[in-house]
Length: 143
Image (cartoon, rainbow, N blue to C red; front, top):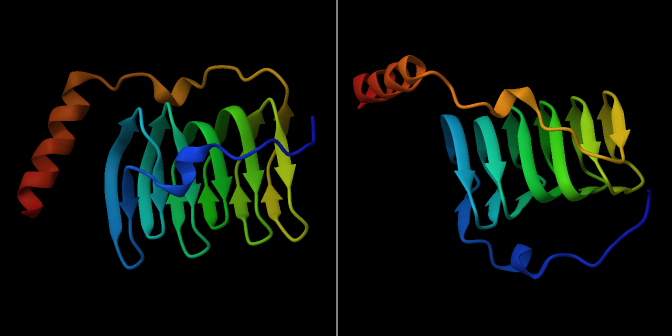
């Protein structure tokens, strides 16, 4: 369905903000609360809450959120449980899966649309313990 629902109240006061000028490189970001990204995030994101990507923000990785407002750039697949909203400044390369989609004029999306039932993505399976340890070691080496 292509229609606009009311915005979730938590997008006005996210519990976590990745500010402009900040780059985060992580294997995965998970959480229950809402997040706003105005900087650059490299890795997968899984949120039970809402996600807002500001106009100057970018995500390189797959995203799953309850609600996702995209005003920046995403390079990866998107899975939304309730609604996905592409603002006029959105630039997306990846497949889109959501029950409700809002496209503002000017938004640019390259990929396949699946509007309806959202299938669970394989990308969000828990990585093997060896991969987690390897990521931690790489992080510690960089400190």
